[in-house]
Image (cartoon, rainbow, N blue to C red; front, top):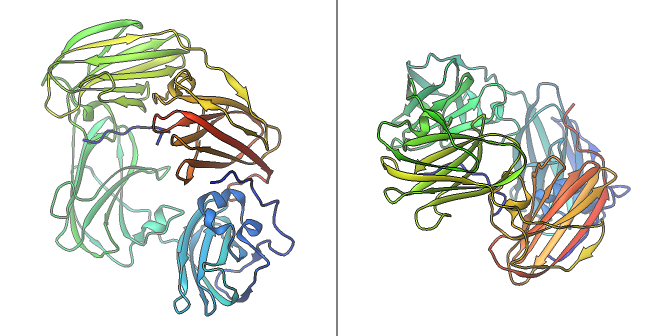
Amino acid sequence: MVKAMKSIVGFSLLAIAAQGWAADCSPQPLEPGTTVSGLLSTDCKGQDSVSPIALVDIAALRPLNVQAYSVDIPENGGVLFLSAAAANFIPAVVVVDGLHQVVTSGTGTTTAPAAAAVSLPRGRATVIVASANGNTGAYTLKTSLESLRDCSGAGLNPGAAISGQLSTSDCRQVDLLVPGTSGRFFDVYKFQITDYTILTAVMSSTVVDSYLILLDAATKKILARDDNSVGNGNAGMSMGVPPGDYLLVATSAGVEAGAYSLRTKVDAPLPCVEDRIALPGSVSATLAASDCGFVDYVPFLTEFSFLKVYKFEVAQRALVTIDLASTRFDAYLGLLHEDKTNIAQDDDSGGGSNARIVVTLDPGVYTILANAYSEGETGAFDLTAAVPDPPSCPIAGLALDASLTPELTSADCRIREMLLEQSAPNPAKAYKLTIEREGTLQVDMAAGVFAPGLVIVDSKNRYPHVNRQQAPGAVRLTTYLAPGDYTVLAYTSDGGLGPFAIQTSFLETPSPSAPE
């Protein structure tokens, strides 16, 4: 059984070398549909021509010989096709979108071109031709731009059976999910749910390896997917779906065409009683076969184990400990926001087969899910919610373009005590960092006796900025930041403790704007 969970836990100390584009290394205009004959020299390196933000995704490009081009994608977007051929070096092509994110790349040989294809929204993209082996010489870059295919889809009446055909003229994944690189054929079905419903969909075929995808119709966010849960290459999903507009995509695991059948049905969920638990407080109850299941209460999860639901309220920011203990079943805890989005889950942190969640919460109403790990398990349990005294967690200052050599100890605070809605027990040190001008921040952390980790949190406790490993014992975090105050957490990801080095570098850079 897999239950969705969110977590931030999972080199030498180098500063950003790029100080903006070198004089002759800025991207040159390139009209899609043209062929360019160029000469790659040692004059321009990746660090001279590529946004520092994009270099996070493809750091190996930094020392390579490159030539960059800017491509304007029209209003309705399109699929950009690239082919770079060279006889004297191994060609590579990289595409960076308007948000400075690497969206695709390809590498060739001296006898075969480097090829790439990617769908892009309206805006300006950067195409980079690079030498993968360090050599230089002439190259030819061919480009073309194809319009996005229509993916508006057909209407679906949930409960209906459909006989369909994946064909080469269908909408493709690259046309619907932009930016994208997959050419899988998509048959798109749109439908609306008016009340919380258990939706079951099964796609079967003797010709293609069936694959199902459920998306939010407005955002195109993938909510669920399945390849072979039904067996014999057939796909299926059964889950709770709240009111809204959705897209159900019938496709294949590979780029395949052929006939398929799609069957859907809808069922009313079992009612879930929402009880209350005081904070602090405790409840003794029994998980029974007559209780509702995960699928009846939590959307987009294919999980049928029995469930009891408890609401509690936090009056002011607090460190909350929730324990679920049972001698009859393997206890499993879930913690949700009031809108049923996930905060934390746990299986065995309470010792043995008991569950425990320790997390810092802001004022609000929250939901506890008292649950068994395996489907069908029942029995008596004890649920406790407590508010222990939070520890004092000091925050030291950290300057830009500076370095420190502190030490992680067992006395340091845990991530869960310093970050909202994070249950990770890893020891960490916190540093305050002030950004006065928008730009790209790089933070390096190295440790010899434990696996290091880094995360940056903004003033609203958002933490999208998480490190990438550079080498064993070393991590690097590079991200664009707007002016403001931030908190850098340096933590141990394997539980080890000891000295470490941390260094910051900052480069003032333009804001990575969304496509116009």
